[in-house]
Image (cartoon, rainbow, N blue to C red; front, top):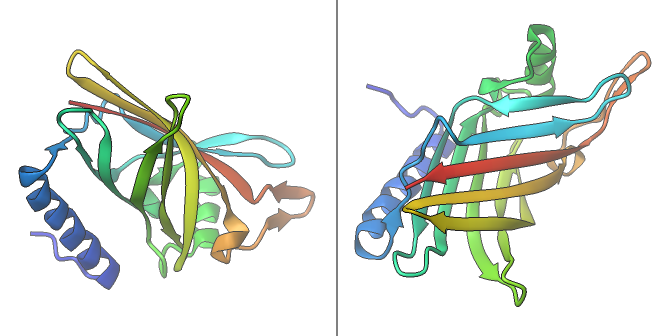
Length: 186
């Protein structure tokens, strides 16, 4: 049995349970296809650019059964599960993010609106490094043959979350990162 130790984890669990309960009455819960879904973070630095992958995450998405519109989303990931393909870089990233003090990143969707050109704009809140910030970003929602696919990119400036710019000798890591997500399920 897993014990939720932090207040944030308990609140997120309560929100997801509430979402699941409400989903039975109002919407359909998207069953995530973990093999096809992924979240990647594009990072630029002086010497090389790299992609960090969020290897484990929890996601609850409800869809309007009639329209396929995303009604609500709650996302949670343990930051220590973010991997760059190099252990030393992963370690340095965990030190920089202070994952011992701030182990989680959370996103909660506030609203998703459809624009006149059939594009979608999502607005919600990201909590990272103990800081909450509102975000707005375009998303694409496709429903075909019982499968729903949600794609988008969120641009985050890590300085907005109280994180310093990483500098070491001649290396500088750009503070603006691009979080690309591809969510698929039925």
